[in-house]
Length: 123
Image (tube, rainbow, N blue to C red; front, side, top):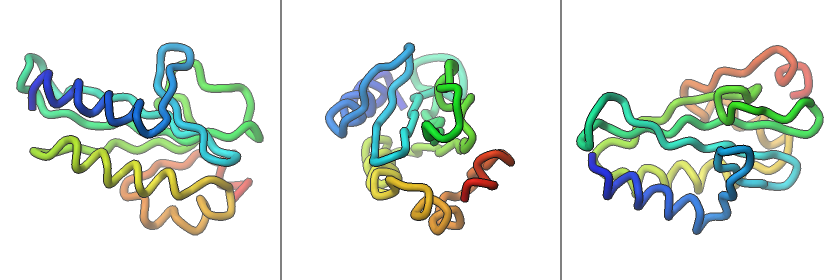
């Protein structure tokens, strides 16, 4: 990966509706907010990229201060060689989920998602 890939992924996120909030990018979809942080898995400009993705709802205050990592649903998604393609695919998937009922029915499709007890009770 490269700094060019990181820049392209951030541009994609913003083009798909991500807005900065408290230093983190989030995408509002219906009653849910998807936090997406682009992270490097290592040091240097060629370190592989991953997306740290979190989902939050107003039904579970307070709003996350630390971005995705503070959300009641958290998952890490490696982007691989086609960072923009992988990010596009992930965004297609999560932006189709805008309410708790759909989220509950989609958990099996969100590979590796960690869901805290408070969110599980809502689902």
